[in-house]
Length: 180
Image (cartoon, rainbow, N blue to C red):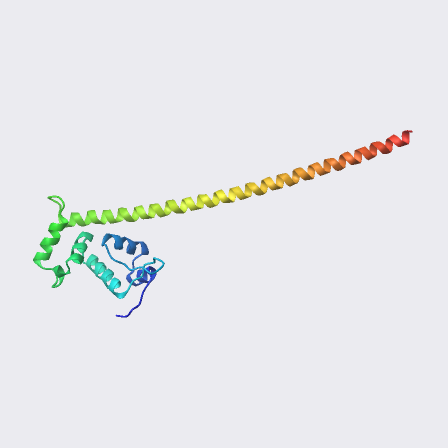
């Protein structure tokens, strides 16, 4: 293994997961992902192997709770799936009597889906708020431009009225002199 440090985007490409999934896994599986001096995540070969292991266990059908247990006790699955491991995993998965392993997996998947949907909802709300702010800024700018044009036109009208008054007074004086 070398000392390479990969960004979250690079690891995302390697594993085929979206960035938000990697951040979710960091919280869900309580992973210690190192950070650089500007607090950005970076992944070494050790973290990548751990994420590959998580992906492999998911593909084998394990739930997140089961994977957490395996990560905390790696000796459970060293020799493949044995009876003790299956018993421990099933007991760990069952919260209530009558829930089987399949039901727990469905509940886990729904919880995961709910978290992802909540994250997406927050991102959409944030994007909408940014767009509304941009639209407000544009309207304020356009409003200010229109007010400036209105002022300019008002000044033009005042100047034209003054000019007209000046011409009328000259015309009036011109006609007055002729009468004398």
